[in-house]
Structures are given as C-alpha cells and as structure tokens.
Amino acid sequence: MSGRGTRVAAGLLGLVVIVTGAATIVARRGSPQPDLPEDPGGRTEEPPSSFQDAFSLADCIQPEDPPRVSQEPARTARREIDRIARAVERLRELRFKHEYEVDFVPSDRLADRAVRLSLEEYTPKMADVEARMLQALGAIPRGTDLRRLVSNLIESQVAGFYLPERELLVVPGTRDDPLNAFDRTILAHELEHAVADQNHDLPLDDVDPEAIDENTAALSVVEGDATLTMQQYTILAVSALDSLAMLGDPRIAEAEASAEEVPHYLLEQLAFPYEAGLEFVCSLYARGG
Image (cartoon, rainbow, N blue to C red):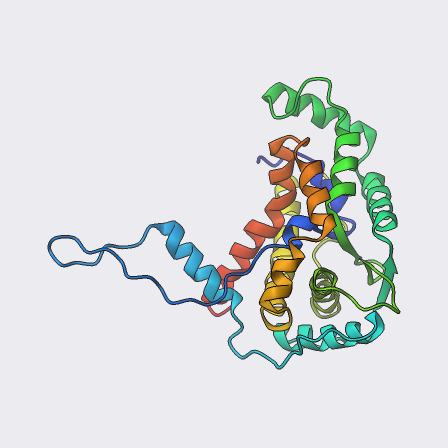
C-alpha cells in the first residue's frame, strides 16, 4: 500500500479490536522438525522457507519459561479476569500499574458499539473516496456501499475491543457466569492491550489519517504483540479438547458465513495486523527483542 492508500482501517484506530478469526488461530504445539530429504550426494536439502517460517513461529509461540496456569475455568468471570491478568503479566513480563475497567456485554451489543465507534472515524466522505478508488482497481464491485460493507464486516467479525483513551476492555459475557475457552482467549488478548498500554502507551494516539502505512504498521505491532500473548496463554490455559471445541462456537460459524459475502481484499486487510503483526513480533523475539 502507498502512503495514500486504503483508509478502511482508519475507523479501527480509535479502538483496538480482536476479530473472530484472530481469536481462533490454532497455535501449533511444539513438535520436532521432520526428517529432511537428502540428495544423492548425501547432503540434506534445506527446507522451503514456508517450513522454516512455520517452525520459527511455533518456537516463538511456545513460552520459554511458562508460568503455572490452571486449565480449569473459574466459577465466575469476575474471578477469571484476575486469573487471566496474572497469567498475562507473567507471559508479557509486565505489571499492571493500576486498575483497569472491564465491561461485559452481550455479543450483539458489543458489535453495535464497535461499529458505532469505528464509523465515527470512518466518515462518509472517506468511504466515498476510497470506494471509488477500490472500484477503479477492481478490488470491490462497482456500486458497493463501502461504509455499509465495512460496518457489516466489523459487526460480524469483532469479538472484543479495547479503548486506549478510557483504558476500557469490552468483551462478551457477564460477570457472574463462567467464561468458555473462546471468551477466556479473547480476554487474554484484550488484557495484553491493557497492560502494554499502561507500561508503554499504545502508539495509536493522534494518528494522521493520511499516514495510512504508518498507521497500519503501528496497529500491526499492537495486534501482533497481543496475538502472541493470546496464543501463549491458549497453549497453557486451554486444553486441547477445549481448543477444538472453540471451533464449534456459533460465533465462528456466523463470522465465516458473513465473510463469504465480503470482497477478499477487505478480509485480507482486516486480518493483516494480526497475521503479519504476529510474524513481525516473533521476528523481534528471535533476535532477542
């Protein structure tokens, strides 16, 4: 993307969202590298770069000094929050400096809030300019109402979000009910945003709407960091059986069904901060960062 590229993500900069697809990435458990083929001269062939990348990512996701984390869920979300927060602190090697606010809301209300907050930044004028550009490039069909499409995309994909200016986590569920594995995973992601924000300030304040590449890069670092912590937490705190059960969560099926009607370009743009961000953050970890 050029510096004057797409602005679809602009509406997401005021709140740090986790989309349903990112919440259900199945972390690869550590496994030995397979035997590599040898050429007739007896030399071992180098694995393709995709294999190398996969093994590097698997090594990154596996915590080096994993803390003890119970896989038994707490009886109430209120208790679970503290438990997950302590695990996130140990995984991230950061401490919460002060209290944070968590707002539990039904999934439909959570989506409505995310859409409303996003569209405050993504104005009709911005959407119109971008729609004409994307239509000219063939990325979306002609006549597409881009602002409505983005609204529907966020509504169907958002699984939780964090508001940096209020230090507020908004996640699905209620305080008095136990959280399932899917919700605990989302909470770990959002709690990482909160602890990172308290210690380092998330680099999302006073963004320049014209600096699209810079904004996307900053968002990718933020989401890659939280996605790595989320994956490490999932390995420790969610059993293999519960990890598989997460894929049966109705929110996943609904998100996948909705995604079928969205242009590939927009889906890739929504997923980019989590996927590319995770790879970038892992590359920093590999260099001791």
